[in-house]
Structure formats: C-alpha cells, structure tokens
Length: 419
Image (cartoon, rainbow, N blue to C red; front, top):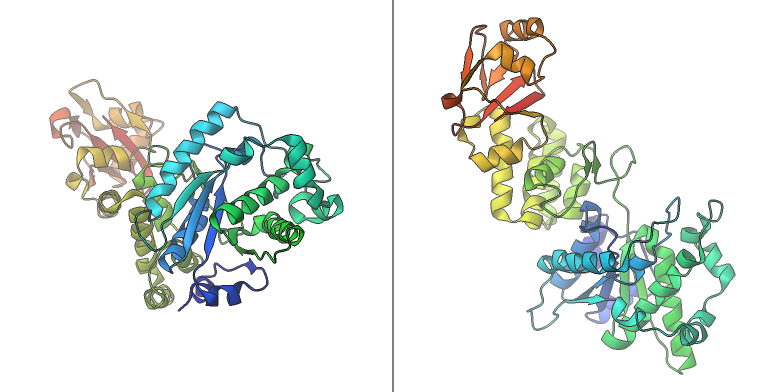
C-alpha cells in the first residue's frame, strides 16, 4: 500500500495539488511541514502533522520539520479572529529550541536512505534584505489573489495588519528556499494552510519560469481534528493538552485519550496511531458490539501515551487508571498517587489522627458535619478505595498509603487527597 492509500484509509487526506499521485509513483519525495513556536510546547493538535512526517518517512520519503523561528515572530492570520500578540524575539528563539527538541524523537536522523532534517527559517528569513526581497519575491504576488485566499478573506472584516498580511509570502519563500537547497517538492499542513501552501507552489513555478526551467512543487493538507460536536480538539475543562510532560502529565495525557467519545475514537486511532488497518477495523467492530468495554479507548490511550511519553510512562498511567477504577489504591507507588491526583483538591493534615467527620469538613469535601454523617451512613464515603460506614472512624497518620496519603472519595467523582 502506498502512502496516499494509507492516508486515505486514515481520513488524513483533505486536499492535494494536481499531479502529486503521479509524482509519488515515480519514487521518493522530500517534503516539509512547518511548526511556528507560539508557546513553550506543542499540543496534541500538532501531533497529526508531526506523525504525518513520520508516516512519509516510514514509507521511504525524506521529511523536513521546519521550526518557524522567523514566521513565529510575525504570526499566521489563517482563520484567526484577531491579530496575534507579537512575542519578544528572545522568547520565540527559546521556544524554537524547545520545539526542535520535541520534534526530534518522532523522526529518524540516522537512517542512511532518507534521514530527516530539522531546520529553522530564521536562518534565511533573518538575513533577508527588504528591498531585494520585495523586488525578487514580492513582485510575484498579486494583492487581489492574496485577498481572495480564505485565510486572509476571513480577516478582512475584523482587520488584518500588513505584518500578518505578509505571512503568506514568507511561508511561500520558505517552500522556495527548501526547494532550491534540499530538493523539497512537497509541503504538508492542516486544511487551514491550503492558501499558504498553494501560494508557495505557485511561487516555485513562477521562479522556475523566469529561469527557463519547469519547476513542479506540490501541496497536501490534512483535515483539522475536531470533537464529536465540532468544537476544537485538544481542549479540556482544565486546559490545553500539551506534549510537554511538565505541562500535561502523562497520566492527564492518558486520561484525555481514554475519555475519547465513541463517535470519534476510531478516527483518533487512525490519526494518532500506527496500528495497521486490520487492527483498527477490529477495534471498530469492538466499539459497535461492546461499547461499554471501551477497548478502543484503552488501546488509543496506551498507544498515544507510549508514543509521546514512552513505554514506562504509559504503563504507569494505565496502572493509575486501573487502580482508580478498581479501588485498589494501595497498589500505587507514591509518585503514582501524586500524578493521579494532581488535579483534585488537596488538604494537609497536621495532626496524627483526626475523626473522619471532622476531616471531611476541614478538607471541604462536605459543607457540614451533618452532611458528612449522612454520606458516611449511606455508604457514599471511601478511604483509600475502601468504603467506610463507621461514624466514629478516626483517620490515623500511620494507616495512610506509604504513611503519607489518604484518598477520600465522596460519591463517584468527588475526591480529596489528604497529605
């Protein structure tokens, strides 16, 4: 199966320029995808593009990951409602290095036949002479044509600065630079990048025409990932799901995937894993036959967490999840308790022993002692995974998990970590 057939099966092929299929039939191609450093970490929405480069490399093609150290200073207006805040140059430079480190694990730089590259467009855009750039590159861009691009057209009513208006030209020049220096013929990106990508394809053709050569370049876009209700993917009540483990812990990352909706879980398996087609079809049948088993969600969470954070982190996250589900909290290591309960309210118990009713009020698990007594009597209170119905129960420090933790649960979802 060729790369386009695989992308089609996975729903990753949104648009492509004419002639790409025929070009790929001729042999391997060099391609690139750009990543502008707009924060100190990439997030799960970036994974589709990152893994697309990896899919092409595994299929024998040569990937280039471009870190936008220069374009990140400008801001892409594509389908944004308002002007981006311009970040300080030193900050963007720092974020560019962080992006480079995050990209490295996904690509193979040692393989002899098609080693990957990571480049930073500040290396050439940062040295441009404005007059030369306008004369040699700017003259190839028609303002009416630029205004007609959806990425710009959507901003005309709310306003767009000249700075962001030039973004398309800069991205097109990136494509030209990589075409001339690395033989890069294909640019990939999300569907919101179609206008920028085709502008670059056209610039390469025009420059070739002036030089008396028939330059051919190509573009391919993936659909933007959404939730079942059409809202933005990668956002939760607690915030963005980051690839940096210090911003989103491996356990939180795992939980994001295991909570995937039944309507979308197969799409996510296609987008974000390297499972073969038969394995995905089998999981699709499992969702239809036994959705309550959530086999597809567990597979998705394990595969993607392992891909991003490694096998050991995925194992720990899965272990925490299983312990919380089964109530076997005494099987968790101390660091697993800290990781699994990072997002729940916590309370520090200063005394060696405290009556349970008083502790529930002090930890703000209940509003009053009366409510605490009602909850204990009804069997709604658990201590370290075990139900407690004793109104006179005393919580003693030495009985804590690892001598340090009590996990109080009221009902099904209200937790408090007592240290």
